[in-house]
Length: 441
Image (cartoon, rainbow, N blue to C red):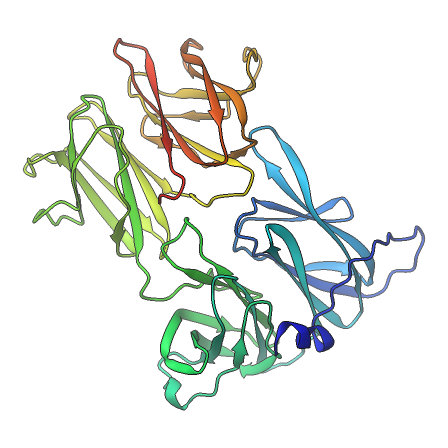
């Protein structure tokens, strides 16, 4: 069923504005799920009227939200973390009718957040589950959707249907149990585009598989959000993870990086000081890296274990004095957001730890302000969003309150950036390195 046909039978989109009248008799509770499928939009605050009902990152589904049957205005706001402000990106109205349930897929059209609203009767069963699929990935062509038990022969299986961008499949039922979602090119079953891990379906459950675009945060070209299932984000089972390394060791010497004790050849060779490495594929799961001086694999300076989730890209930061190195790791979070500078901070300055970090408008007195982050050496912050503008960066010794760098003028443009703190030339000082992560892992 294409988007226009779906509108006639399953998709109801209402753009009128209507409030709720005081004293109105409330109807039965109605279930709503919301999926963030807008790839260049920041974290969403989904509001019923002005009440926040869910906060969603990209490719995330809310739990079931229960509302009285009625007509509501729904609002979509996007937060700017650095200043604590938010901007309204979409407003729409919808009648919530008793004995029905709703899925709101928040996607993008020409850079604007647009809701696709799906309405269907409540599913009830003691033995079966209900499934459907929604195509919200503009970068992905039409796909055939299969949902079969693991190990099933797809050459004899019948797909749930074919779906293109903006489309939705008619609901189907499957006996409760474990399944595998497979997406193939429409009409070409041999061209498998995604074969998921195990997806559990519970009796009486209703699951919508929402296809979403890939972003720079993942090695996967696209993914599937299983709204209504306990399964996590679905990517192809063959998808690897990836990692990059930033060398901020105090001696500024090059380092080699090895993976899982294989010292045959380094995964990253002669990694220069304060220069992020390229993204390097790595198998998902528990991984261990070893850091040595460049060309000297017999001297392991530090080992670091981390768990790589399938499809995610990680950054590892080396910091400290030779013989006392440490490594921090964090998901890269390099998705680009329209109109926003996304920035994270790394403390590679082992001379000043912990380090308070301030990003403030010019000429701001930080005396009574709380830092955005306080990081130990080899610490990596999450990314925050800020309006492209002029700022000042101030770094402070968290133990003594002494300013160790700044106020440093900083002009942020739209894009993705890292501020790396490294040891200064004299004890107790810090140098600042600005890294442009835009269009990189």
